[in-house]
Amino acid sequence: MKYKDLPAWSRMAADWGENYFATIRRRPVRSSAKPGEFLSKLPAAAPEKPDDMHTIFEDFERMVPDGMTHWQHPRFFAYFSANAAPASILAEQLANYIAANCMLWQTSPAATELETRMVDWFRDSLGLPGHFRGVIHDSATVANLCAVLTMREKALNWDGVANGISGQRQPRIYATSENHSSIDKAARIAGIGSANLVRVSTDDERSMRPESLRHAIEADLAAGLVPAGVVLCVGGTSTGAVDGIAPVAAVAENFGLNIHVDAAWAGAAMICDEFRRHWEGIEQVDSIVINPHKWIGAQFDCSVQFLANPDSQIRTVGLRPDYLSTSSVGQITNYNEWTIPLGRRFRALKLWFVFRAYGVEGLREMIRNHVSWVRELQSRFDSDPEFEVLTTCPFGLFTFRLSGSDEFADKNTRQLLERVNNGGQIYLTQTTIGGRFAIRMTAGQFECTKADVDAVYPIVKEAGENLRA
Ligand code: PLP
Image (cartoon, rainbow, N blue to C red; front, side, top):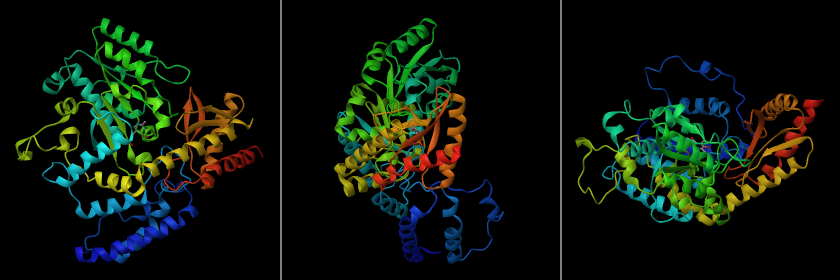
């Protein structure tokens, strides 16, 4: 295939995409593939001679979609959505044609400057103060790692990057167990170690107790350890837990600790004024991550990290070898210096298309709808004695299970979930709350309607009845 053949095939792909979206509701949301099933259909070695493009395309159509779980199905209620607005899919197609590596300003001036402006647009729509600047990473995992590395280095006065961390006094990071596992991963990769990720206790609302944080820090200081920073969550993955930023900041400030806020999912809701009370004090933190690929509609991957002072992070993860040096230093930003990978995709384009195609007002309306539909659904489960709602959260995520003894509810809720997902009409996932098995429900797909969310209750109810029969 040559570049000259690409337009015709791109049109084929667009037609395929049109049909995919037109018929997606007929597909089971979660793939019913068996492990190894797809692999067994693939030849063991790459072809020596080129295959005909028609055959390649036919094989794709015949084999791939049925082997996939359909994240853009409007009834995908599992995990958090990776919601891809049509305008964002289009932007990705255009970025694919240019196929730039946006590692330096010089390798991608428009992409770099668009990134700066998109981060500013996003910051302002979230109501964040103007001192925050930012960078677009691939994932919140990388943003969290950058934040943890920066905390570590600030606490060690950048001796870790110079001399390594063995032989240093032990840095300590504080978070609750509601944080995403990428924080555990960051602690491991940063050489801090899981044992030095201190789990601060939570209150009845699953929020960090500031007094417990203070005690943990004081005990560590007394033991000669080095408190490095606090990671808070606004919309934790399991149940949507929200830490109180202002009360924690009041403690952290006394000890000069960095604060990073992981709002990968729920941060997007802050484009709506009414949710902002849930991150009161946000202006005091050092770093925040929000994934537009989760709820704003910028196709995966797109994760924005806001930084109160980018210099600390650049000092930690940025390098400028001779072969990357360019002119205009001082007037330009080389975003690779703000993150871990050198090579970077052109991610700002999809944010530009999304903001312009829907307007912030359009995105607000979508988020408000999702939240209110999920709340309504939650009240249906709440008023049915057959179910127990275990947790709720302000952003439209609740967990529930069958009522009954722990033993009965654990076993049967597990089976209920399996039945529901095997049915293919909706897709939900699970979590545990204090060791109790629960089903998680949240909505976020771009084309999801009230009817889609309303469909959850009768489907779950019927599966529950069949289970008892
Ligand atoms: N933080 C939170 C709160 C999350 O929910 C997730 C994923 O769901 C992550 C971090 C990791 O996100 P990513 O897949 O962008 O690394």
